[in-house]
Image (cartoon, protein in one colour):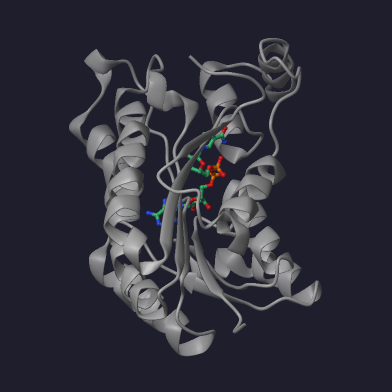
Length: 250
Ligand SMILES: NC(=O)c1ccc[n+]([C@@H]2O[C@H](COP(=O)([O-])OP(=O)(O)OC[C@H]3O[C@@H](n4cnc5c(N)ncnc54)[C@H](O)[C@@H]3O)[C@@H](O)[C@H]2O)c1
């Protein structure tokens, strides 16, 4: 079988970097996409040093031209991408009465518009190949979370988007699924701890105590789930939302 090519957005660090490394270890060639190509260097280097194939791609996922250019560049270098992991994300937390229109639009732009633009750009290669995998990052915040009206709406939106892509592209051998992580140790959760004025280690301990498996999540926990969803054997799993949160969610 020909080598599969994946593109992972927001892969300079955190969950995206772990997913990119894991897919490369699984044998895929990986486009490591983030706002600044230079920031992707560590992820690309880790992949190539381990014997994998990767290229750095600089793009803003919320910008149509930027996405088209990056996906075109990837197709021209590593080959046509048939796996997309929509992982790029930002937080602009605030209580509703203090949330600005910019806070709302920025979050919708990166998560929802970004996933739409990336998936639309890659789907033509999937349809041509009659095979594809779409993995979207949702969140337990999709179920509602104080201070995150914008983010929870976007992450719930990712679930509806995922199910619709699964319905539309299924006949082309494409699956679409969402991963909804709970608390994962990354710069994003470190920034949340800093914003509420709590030491990050203490924040993690307090969070772990509330989680049935009694620990916080690591980017590798999400990478493992993404690896499964992208795998050849997962072709009958589609339109699903997998909560990866160390316990049930409500
Ligand atoms: N960390 C968690 O606990 C957690 C929980 C649930 C869901 N998630 C989701 O997982 C994903 C990754 O989160 P993380 O914790 O690794 O975050 P992170 O902040 O560590 O990394 C996000 C990456 O996305 C990139 N990015 C932001 N805007 C972009 C844009 N417009 N175009 C391209 N790249 C952009 C950033 O530069 C960064 O490298 C996000 O979608 C996040 O919402 C995270």
